[in-house]
Image 1 (cartoon, rainbow, N blue to C red):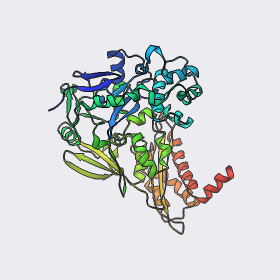
Image 2: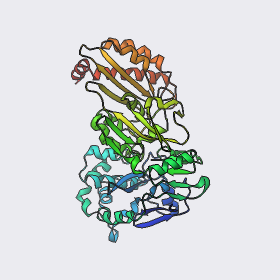
Image 3: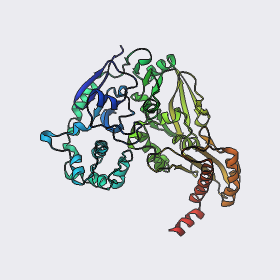
Image 4: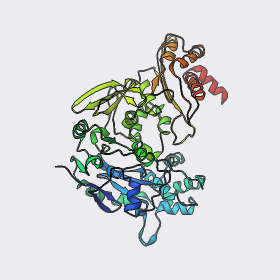
Length: 486
C-alpha cells in the first residue's frame, strides 16, 4: 500500500502534506506557508547560511541532527524527519537560549540578518561538542557568511555557550526520545506518492522499489542531497518533475570498510563518508573540509558528485587516482565500471536510461604508494574548484617509478587522467629532472579553457606546479627544503 502524504515534524507539530509542489523548497514552506520568518533567504544557492535549520533523522536507531540550508532543500525530502527552526529555541518567560545569550554577551550580531542561521549552525555544533575548539567552531561556520562582525565575536560566543547552559538540559536533547517515538509511527518501507504526472513526488519504499520505479520512469529527476538539483530550481527555474527522493533509503546510505576497500552507498553524505575515507586516506582530510560548508557537506552526497558528471567535482580526481569503481544498477541488473570510464564527455556518462549509481568502491592504497590531492579555488572556504589534482606514484627500491596515476578536474570537459605525463614518469628515477622532463606532456593531456574561475594559462601552470609540489612532498629533497625554509 502506497502512502499519499509527506509526513514530518516541524518543531513540535506533526505535518502531513498531501498536496505538495515538487519544486517547493523548505525555505519557501517555512516562510510563506508557515510564517516562520526567522529563517532568512540570502543567496538561494546554499552558500550564505542565512537559511540554516536543523534536520533530524533516525540513523541506526538514534535521532541525529544536522545543519542544512533550507533554500535548496526540498520539502518533499523531509519524510520521517524532524525540522528545527530558530523559533523552537524560545524558552519560557522569554528567556534566551544559551547560544542566543552568548551571542548577545559577546556582541556576535550587528545587522542581525545572518544571525538566526549562525545560531542554528552553532546549535548543531554545541549538541555534538559542548567544548568545541576554535578550529571546530570555524569549520561549523564555513557555510555562514557574515558581512558585519568579522567572525571573532561569533567565535568567542560559540566557545562560551556552555557558560550559559549545558546540552543535557536543552529541550531538544530532552525531547529526543519523544520525537523519535513520533517519527517511528510514520511507516517505513512504504512508497509515498504525492501529486500526478510531472507534478508528482515519489519517496521509494527501499532500494528495490527505487530501482523498479526508475527503470519504468527514467525521465524522473533523482534527488539525494539536492545541493546541485536545488539550484536547478532556485537559479535556473527549471521544471524538473517528477522527483524521486532517495536520501532516506538505508541501502544507499551504507558504508562498508571491507578487506579490500571502502564501499560507499550513493546517498552517503560527505560528512558521513569522511571518517572512513580519511582513516585510510589521510591526505583527503584537507580536501574534504573544503567541499562546501558544513551544511552542504551534511546534504551533498558522494554518489551525486559522481553521477552529475561535473568536470569540476571535487571527489572524482582523487577516486580515479585511487582506482575507484562505480556500481551501476538498472532494475535488477548491476554492473561494475572503473570510475574513469564512467565519464565520456561533457554532460555525458556511461549510464543507460533508468540506470543509476548505486555505490562507489575505493580500493586501499598498496603499501609504499604515495598519494595526495590538492584543490585550488579563488576563495579558500566554500568555493568551487578552479582545478583539483590528484597524484599517486609507486617508487621501487632503486628509486624508479613503477607506476603513476594523475588525474585532474577543471582541466578538461570531464575529470581526466594525465596519461602522457604518467608515461613520462614511469620507468624513470623519481627525481626533479624526471618531473621537469614530464612537465611538457601536460600540453598533450589537457587543453584547458578560460572562464570566471581561472584562465587557461593559470590552470596549465597550476597543474604543472602541483606535480612539482607532489614531488617535493614525497621526497627527502622536499623535506630538506621545508626544514630549511622553517
